Amino acid sequence: MDNLKPETVIVNGAGPVGLTMACELARHGVPFRIFDKNAGPAAESRALAIFPRTLEVFSSIGILDDVLAEGQRIDAMSLYNDTKRMARMNFNSIDSPYPYAIALPQSRTERLLQARLEALGGRVERGMEMTGMEQDGGRVRATYRTFDAAVQTIEGGWLLGCDGAHSAVRHLMGMNFQGGQYDEEFLLADVKIDSDLPTDEGSLFFTKAGIMAYFPFKGGRGRVIADQRPGTQHAGQEPTMEEIDEIIRQRCYHRMEVSDPAWKAWFRISHRMVERYGSGRVYLAGDSAHIHSPAGGQGMNTGIQDAFNLGWKLALVVRGLVAPSLLESYEAERMPVARSVVNLTDRMTRVVTAQHPAAQQLRDLLVPLLTGISFLKEAMAERLAEVSIDYRGSAWVENHGLGPVHAGDRAPDAVLYDRVARAECGIFDLLKTPGFVLLVFEGWEALPAAEGILGDLPGAVHRIVRPGQVGEPGTLEDRDCRARTAYGAAEDGLLVLIRPDGYVGYRGGNAAALAAYIERLKGMATV
Image 1 (spheres, rainbow, N blue to C red):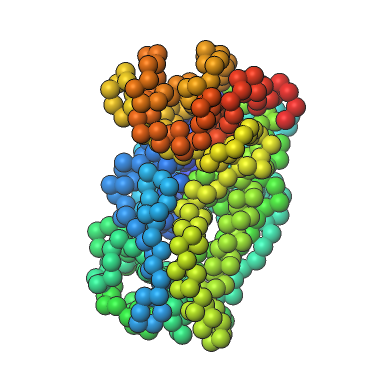
Image 2 (cartoon, one colour; image 1 turned 90 degrees about the horizontal axis):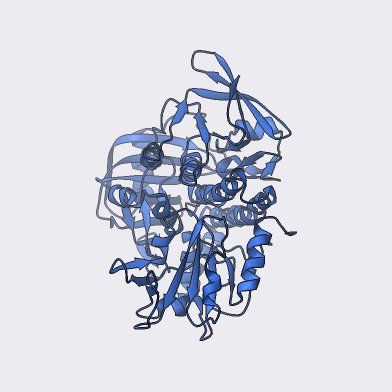
């Protein structure tokens, strides 16, 4: 038996979710081991869309620059009805430093995350297939079979199932995966593309023959996706280039020539969720907990944010800084998000794949009308970007007073001026250091009490002053008052505690209330 330290975390699965989880554990200084049954990262492109909120996560992890360099920037999504464009949804209205999507094959995303993990001192142990699992008190034991059929038992304090739709962890836990499969079959082809379609936007074609979507990659390649009528069965066969060409000719009224396929397949999609995200010392994240239609490109993004939500919480528990009850917030906060994504993508799938002529006519009438209403179009863009997700209903956040930002919201970014470094500094830059960020907006009479208020929780206190106002060394100057406006700081000051995952945990102006919240978060009082 391979005995690990009692606090060691076992991560099963080294896709984007497992690698994100491992990077977070490494950044927070928690011992872990990550296992995967495959010999290397994914060879196929698989998930491709990386939305603004995930780009913000990648900024914190430290791979954003590489993702932007390798990925294709997507500024909009155009919807076509036969020969004309009937709607265009821009991402530039999204309140994020990255108001766009990035198209990058999952195979490249995994390699960038793995490289970052290795730079943080971790590594993936490959050729390890989980065949058994049990937990007893404060220990978890996982049994693995290696490539050479040897058997190893790995023991640790926690087990995280990040092992995808066919999760061994979920299966061994005996958890139901409720839902169903869609009737339609879909074509997927990652190919070299020569077309007059824009390379900075995605394209979706609605036709009587069915739908077709096109997403460009860098380097003259891209992905084509199309539905097939219910009842079509290809029984695992690979589509031919002739079939792909025929679908494109029927459904795309722009010039598009395809060649050199890297991956082509027929596939079916499902929508399923577990009833619980964890049991005892075992938790699920990503596709192991929820799968849904790829409509909207939400799957990988949702899973990565599962990991980003759980990683810092588990790190604090492992390090003995908070009570294990904090982990209850993982399911409470992330399960409603997954349920919402499953419902949204289900509705989108049923709308875009409508088969009845009357339903197609109604869809083609409503889409341009609804997307022509600015606030609806912006709301839809924010929903896809996942920047509007909030945890306001969580019992682990606390809000006092009114303002544009509420506890449980994603913290907005704002550019400040660091007087010591004599350089600009964004609030998101502060989040790159693992830990809490306490923003103290000047005006509060008891400012000195902010020092030491975090106790032994990792983090930093940052005082924010008005333009030209005298402040102590280390203060950040809000030169254009955008931070004060974004957070709704009143004349008498404001305290905003941002969690390590970039969400507001506490917002208010009372030091005693903040101190009490921190003690409650640590488990010294009832949550």
